Image (tube, rainbow, N blue to C red; front, side):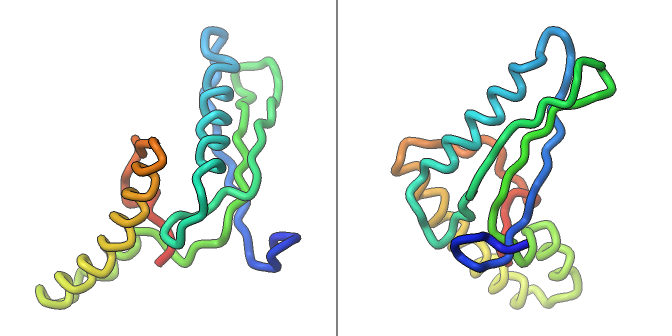
Length: 130
């Protein structure tokens, strides 16, 4: 897929949201709120933007889950795959790769912190772009 304005490849990510009578709508609202907040962060070269987001309410049955749909740029990879690739590298190569990897991540985090946001789900799968 390509973004209609930027002519660049995009990814459509579907996030399944938990469902129960007690939480129906709560997870969807929290997830959509998080996506809207992420979209409000000013552009930065070390943060993947979210082009659009929406909630799809599937049905009333427990087996049918709501989905958060995110459209974002296609990333080359994530930190989890980078760690796997470093497995056979020498200690010096690993140190260089880790330093080169950490700098843009820290720049991106500093940028969102300067705007008053805190990322509460930092994990290798959420660090993308390599």
